[in-house]
Amino acid sequence: MAIKGNLVPNITMFDREGNIDEAKTSWHMDWMFSRGVDGLFLTGSYGAGPLMTNEERVRIFRLAKKAAANFKGKILLPHVGCIDTAGAVELAKAAQAIGVDAIGAVPPFYYKHTDDVIVEYYKAIIEAVDLPVYAYNNPETSRYTFNLKTVQRLKELGLAGMKDSPLSIGFVSQVAYMAQEAEARGEKPFQLIIGTSTGWLPLYFMGVRATIAGMNNWAPEIMTELVRATFAGEMDRARQVYLAMMDLSAKLHFTDSTIASHMALYARGFDAGFPRKPMLLPSFSDSKYREIRGYLELAFSKLGLPFETGNFEID
Image (cartoon, rainbow, N blue to C red; front, side, top):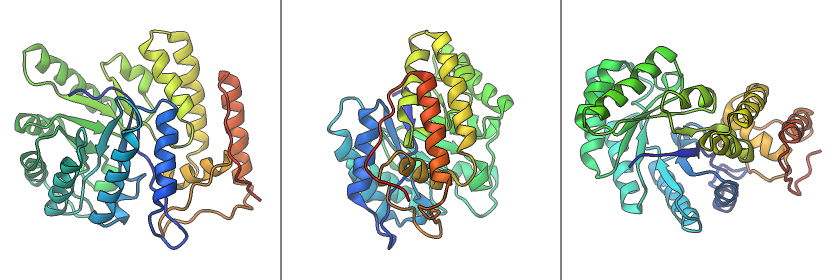
């Protein structure tokens, strides 16, 4: 199964005490789906996976399954990466039992691992489930950077593809063209997915057909319009939206992306709960919320997109 379109590494919402807020998390999933987001990448870094127990992560998988049932054709791609192999395998099996479409996993993090260790880790996950398994290249969090040789070894073991966040053009282009060459030879398809909105438009011409974009957490209308215009071949519109998206994205990169996502939702008037500690939101009296509101209003206005707001009032 090839994953296509506009996915989101959706945030998990907690209450002030750090408990999962199922009502707000479910509302957020529904809200994004109804605004054109094609799928959810669950309990990754945005989704606070490393701050949660496996049981809590499974709860989020179940919430997503329930939310997706209200829409047609939505993709569920749980992130099952753990610091240990057994934990990742346990999550992968639980995700399959719930009925998701595929699974993704960052390499085991914190410790420094060799290529051979990484291959064995993914081999265990691939052999544990009958689902497409995607590796997630995110060296900033895992301390491991994929190389082409390791990707080729994993492809031979049955890896379905890779989500890449750093977007090192040399590596990304090698993986993209390796996959195309292999498919041309009649081999099993291997898919490259970009784990960011950055680079979407140029990489589309390299064969990329799916993005997992954090902006969907707080401005799904913009990403939906960008992907729609690209697929429709409306390149003048796609370039316009891409430039606006890149500008807005840069303005929100003033703090951790999970915190920025909560803040941007509050700036739109939506009660977005809280991140789990040690992450903290600035006080609602902080002027940054109104600054973000201004950025959003300007971007939506320039693109001619309706700007929906909620009833939550910041101080």
